[in-house]
Image 1: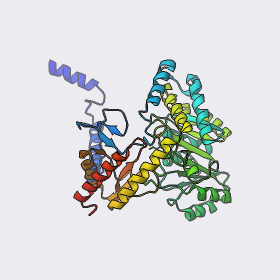
Image 2 (image 1 turned 45 degrees about the horizontal axis):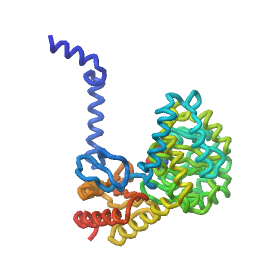
Image 3 (image 1 turned 135 degrees about the vertical axis):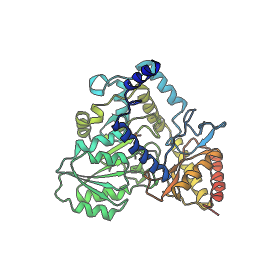
Length: 418
Ligand SMILES: Cc1ncc(COP(=O)(O)O)c(C=O)c1O
């Protein structure tokens, strides 16, 4: 009787116990795919953190806290007391969330305040918030570009840009990474397009290299194109006062459209935005699908964003600190004999080549109290595996010395350096 009852229950729980031919087929196909990933040494496992985000974190079963060199917490604001306090106050005053999209009953005064703050920070006419920068990138191209238009995208742009562009009906051009003559060649092919939009990451997250925005803007002027930049790895900390890649190149105001995130330097919670011409922002509020059809950002998250912008607007100390830390780490690693990609940005990819080497290297580092992650295909090209180190304003000189010493020890052990 019991067995019959159990089998009846099993057959009622969808997914878990149904053993149809289709489910068996699905499992076989997926298992094979998973095996391929494991065999290639590109399996990405997740370490579980049991503490707050910061330069010191507790990871998995490690008894002691480890130094964190792999987060996008560039300004060290993720667990900053003022940020936490702002979130707590907002939670109390405005609640946990809106249970609504923005245009129904999901817009509070603090959502508008943050949008104004973002536009002022970037010196643009207006801004619109999204649940993430991924969503901001998913929305914009489909809304703005039609079959009469053309889009020109750097081949190494972030996945969310690639996906966003896929959704639009413009003619699509992919130019070689940072290659201005290739970009110009493509622009010349589109003399008759209505709108021409050049699209680039400000800073490329896997290589830490920087878009030549000054040259891109010049080409845009020459060929009557617009410029869009994704500043996820620049807003708040890159450039003299943290205004991003435009400021780094001394061309503030020349880029037409900026998308960025609140999920990295600016408090690290979540949220993304577009800032630019007022009319474009108005249109995105009417047509941007991730804006129209996804829940409004929760008040505590909005409050962390507002506070993060206030911190950056009030003092340049954290921006200076992350710049100092970057220089210190990069110089020491190059001197030790490592190949460090990128230049001048807190993303410092330590190039290792083989996928498996990168993952063993990262494990050895963790065993020495330094938390870094190996990046391999498909996140980066095959045989270009690396450990991506990211510096934060919250690292001390001593933290950096410890990381470099561990790199040298492991590098020698695994014959990466002599
Ligand atoms: C360049 C770039 N754009 C967009 C995103 C997505 O940002 P979010 O986490 O806000 O969706 C990322 C995040 O990895 C990124 O690196």
